[in-house]
Length: 227
Ligand code: CA
Image (cartoon, rainbow, N blue to C red; front, side, top):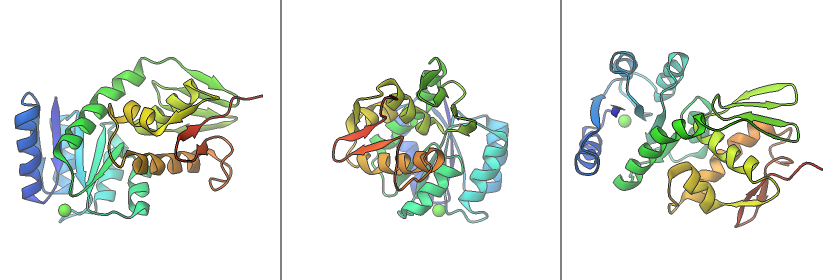
């Protein structure tokens, strides 16, 4: 297990290193404060997961993300002080798998990293699902909707997989959090809302008037069964 941290705040790198040392001593950590160097290290170090800061001295984290996705499928977790939803959605849109806002809880960060490195594997073993016009191949994270082919991130794939498997039933916020991160967190509902919004933008004709992924206020989400 190898983690690449692309982050220019030395204190944060130290906090993450210490958390891993205590809770996950087998993991090997490598880090750089530069985006360009980070891209090189994804190739040379072949990490299992990347923690990416959006504000770097030599490059925008968004550009690093975009370049990284051009050649690598490694799970990426954005760690950022930017709390604006638009930035987070942009990060997810450009291929990040998860995000956390600074300041963060160390245990939650470790759990999310663990979930990201494990989850790719768990979806890989799942067989394709169909529901109405939706067909989803979890291992390729490829969604077919009518004639359209839509690529999903790991997190989006995990959510859609849960909704399709339970079509016709409400999937609770808590059940979705457990499927995504292995446990339910304070604030998980807010994160899930961001992912659902992104999924709707990819799938729904009008994301403001969703017909495919329905909100069950204060409960969770529902994919209606086709007639
Ligand atoms: Ca920074």
